[in-house]
Length: 166
Length: 432
Image 1 (cartoon, each protein chain N blue to C red):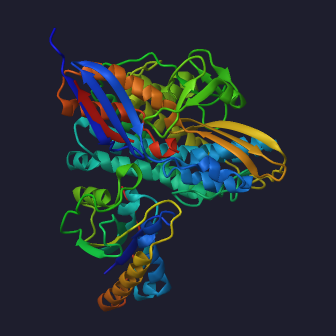
Image 2 (cartoon, chains in turn cyan, orange):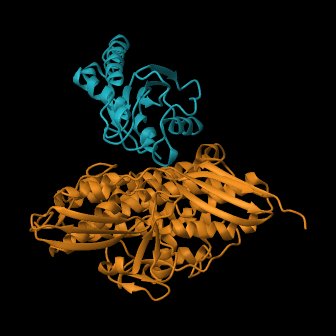
Image 3 (spheres, chains in turn green, cyan):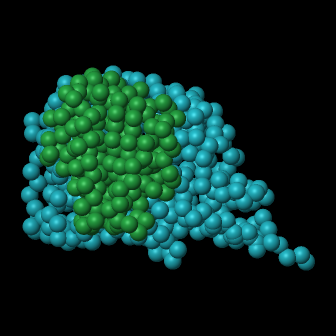
């Protein structure tokens, strides 16, 4: 089973860094030694299909829009169900995680399983630090993912050779 | 006399543009009464952030202005500082900067042609819906964009907000073999760009032409990226140092982006159509022939055909990237040191969306005492509104939903980058 965990976001925009912070924490916790690959994705959602190319199982972590409960975590089985609108903050040219996932669904480019962990953010302005609520959620999500990876992966094969995505 | 009804069309948030803006159109009967392109994304004050910073920090800071065209910001910035400091660059660095810009044009134009503008012409609300019926086409667009991303990642150290550009050159110059690794994909990209041009030339274009003043860089020997005089089809021919004497920015109440106009004249257009019309004979034969095959004539005055012009610039950028890679020999050192001195430097380069002007005043320690940045969308903003004044009259008898669609398409002709301009669209259509 080839598994990768993708942390999305922008370190310069407060809680938008949530996914990246989870990825860094997983890296620090040595999750890669269990056989999972950790990917930080700040290059825009158009690159997501390339990031998960070659993996059977993908977990994507990103910040989601404020709903009054900062730090709350929601999980979607994106391989099975369409993602809700107006949950993920839009990225460049209004093309965010939801648009990338739905485009991949139309183009048959989704991995076998795609779980999306959404961490509800509170502040997204330029230069803001992450909110304490999101910092706590980052720790919690990372712990859940470590346990999930430990339970799921017995020494997994590494990612298959990367072909050119065309 | 019967009272004519007034209709108001509002697009509260413009889709498929970079940044946040809205559009307001007021009609009395079938006549336009008012058009406002409202850019409400807050100002980002980058020019103020730069004060007190050393010029060496400049490329990394200005790259943060835009996720789509960071190279343009870096190039205008480093050229302006090099002009201020009298720093020359190695010819190999000059070539590498052209390659860097090719990468940005390829990724930006591919994104706009395939993902943002083509759905308008084909009747889809977005690229996802378009992909259901045109999967191979969207796949081609994504691969083209990725070809540009690869150049940017190699040259800039990473795909987004690249970090390698420096005053005097690059922090690291690529090896010949690293560049050669790009060749096969760029050859594919050149063929795909020609196919793109052929495809988009067959789309339906509204019969709409305007008498524009086109403004772009002009270089005597090459299609412009980093160097050249600022020229127009109405006689403007100036050095970048004369920009502020010839152009001025005006604040309008409904927009957080300044409207740029030519002093004593009025609005003007920058971007692919301006470059194409003013520099057609500098395009390589393959791009000139592709333009002729697409039925493009010089001057092209129909802004809806800008999608075809972008495709021609894709052909150019892929061809140019291959040329640079063929001719490249690594420089002896990737960058020359520039000594600080009190000075002022201005430069303009060609971002994918058009002319991007920077000016920096430096003190004797190399610290920036003032900065001025005029992005292409700010320069096109007044022209976009004027297009809409004329275009809405052509479609005013149509249902509000269709008017809204057409207006958004007309705005997207310019591939506006509102985040840059504020440093785009909600449509509000009102009828009496």
